[in-house]
Length: 427
Image (cartoon, rainbow, N blue to C red; front, side):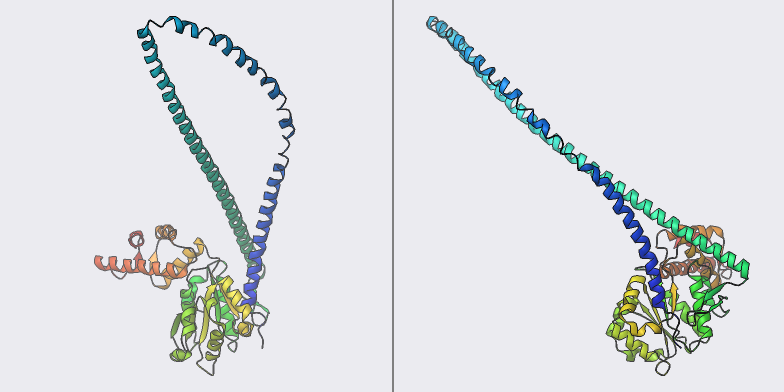
């Protein structure tokens, strides 16, 4: 029986939604920029004013010419007369000769000062120009940052509205029919969503995360309804964020529900898998193989892995974790293995609220308790990491619980397992 749909088709639908939003934003910015550029073109209008300037120029030039000729003529005649009369007075001549010497030096000094002033003013002008350029660049940067923040806020508001609409539809569906219904990925029929089996304890912490809980519940219940179909799973995360812990939780629940025969779990990065021979996976028989950054696996290697995981070979489940774009490209280029992956679990849209919900479930799963101030402190700690990096957050929670054990052991009450705010701050 061929599946009604598979994980690749679900990934393509997600990508279409994402690209449709990005195209709408790009068109808005293009039209806005074009509208801003059109009024700048009519500036070359002041050309006719340049023609009117040469008229006053010929009038001013002939005036200084006659003045310059008339002034030196009368002044040149009286000067030789006093010189001829003052021949017997050498001392008087020496005195005026000494006076003009400093007078000649003064204009030289003043000329240097003027040059220095000019250089200083030029430097000041250049500095003012640089400051103005930097100011304009800073303003442009701030304006672009403001626009980006507005676009991000707009997208976030739209996503929030979509989540609210989805929540309303779910409430209406539950109120109207009493049972929420979803599409079975194998048969395409409308079936009750149901709840997680009681033995799927490691998956219960995901059951209250918006956008993720349905994928987890639907996948597990569909696998139980169709045990003859491949149980392989694709887990979508954000780029660079770890979701291997989610794969481990599926593997442990599969063993608890007796969907697999062994509790063995092998975790391997895609680049490492490309280099090893499949004989090293023989000890995994009946367990689960988790491939990290699966979009980087060599196609022929993954085809070998799928064949090696068949029931008549080593009989293990393959769980792929990776980023949506890389996995979409991988499945598009390798259609022969698409039908081996029916179930898709999306972690890529998880936010702070979902991470805190995950923390509540994980703390309860491990047998610990915490009050409201602890979760408020966890929110502050979460700001130092990424919302969506499940692996890093789970490791942080493990350290918090270890700090609780250490404190309670030193206080002599090691059996309460109650997490305090100071335990979170200590990590």
